[in-house]
Length: 290
Image (cartoon, rainbow, N blue to C red; front, side):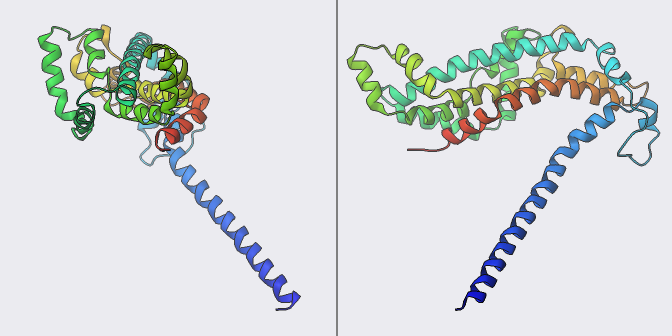
């Protein structure tokens, strides 16, 4: 094979690589547009006036007269600020209690030896096969019998544990060499001190991931708050969105509802952007062994 043929092969290979990169970038760009379009449509709708939105027989992908009136309506039509505060309290308290339960449970299954541990953990994992919808009525009856409807405690209690998060953190704890635990026990270190000083710092990415996922879950909670509360003093933002949607002078006030959704989504988007690297690292670390 002479030099000119080698050159042609190199050029052909370079062209194929370049075309492959162009195709990949085009695909990713198209996919990005598809993923981001609902967010664009949400923001666009939030700056359309109520009248112009309802007069559009064919949806328009732009507006020449943006308005911020819908954001004002979102906070004046319903006490959205109070719903924000309720959601913040619900999210912080639920996440804090759940992390306490999850960390101790994961540590027990990962490092402690007790009779029936494997059988108990297998039974525990089997709970993941039960859809939440099947237990929501049981939770409702239990909370009602305890006279905890329309209370923060009634909102919080059914969400203070998670089999999946315990499993995720347990897998992460088990990646830490057991020799460290045995050496710490020889030195007289207590289990709680070993957990606090060794395991939690090493597992920080996974713990941050679990916290953020739980915050998003609580912030977006809809079915349980709607079911267990009928007192507006305990409504969350999900209740507020529904109220705003119905405040449309005989028609659905979709622009005001979209404005509320934009405001509600901002904290979650900011939280994800700040910790996105740790989220990816935590999920990847928790999903690998060895």
